[in-house]
Length: 294
Image (tube, rainbow, N blue to C red; front, side):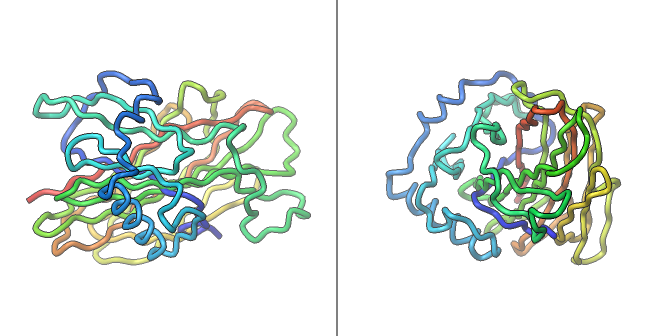
């Protein structure tokens, strides 16, 4: 079972309201221009993010704040990421006409995978099992309004007998919270197929429909391939989750929506399962966004 699944690193956060338009993509190398890791502010932000992750029970090798990079994309707009993470910056036109840099996390390629990290309690001697091949976590915060921490885990189905396809599962989850006088309005996670990915085909996804709640409670998500399932337990609070399942294989979004003040954490998550040509590898671009309003 996955719950907040054993995590090694951390995921991203974006702040957006209404509809935004992607204008252009910058070279992933350009993010180095915004590196403030070695400043006192960067050091503090990295350690605070790592402490939050530890508080969630997200065990990770980098939870002491070391080997984390901190980027200031705009005044007061920060991204915390593993030093090894691949990040692409995109210019996004905001509803007010301004243009803002938004980071997209690129999931690991086969060369960067951590094959054999764990097997979710299933012995590798089993004929078929889901093996964790990659995991990363990130944090995005707007200095005055709030933050969102998110992680992904990538599993590969091992021991299956399909001679044509390989099967992968992506879990993406986040915790968001507003600050001080601000009200958290929504928090959204999304994955899209990256241009470097092998061709994907849909196998499964969860949630499979929108979810509404009158109060906070547990929800179990699960997906499967060839009869082998993998699951995780998360927390869903009112008003609920609003999913978007796209026709494009591997593209999915889930948004928590509701109003919460005084500031309190809210979680959002999804799981998707795809198949790729045998020997191929799925690569996603991940975003995490939130809206906190006065």
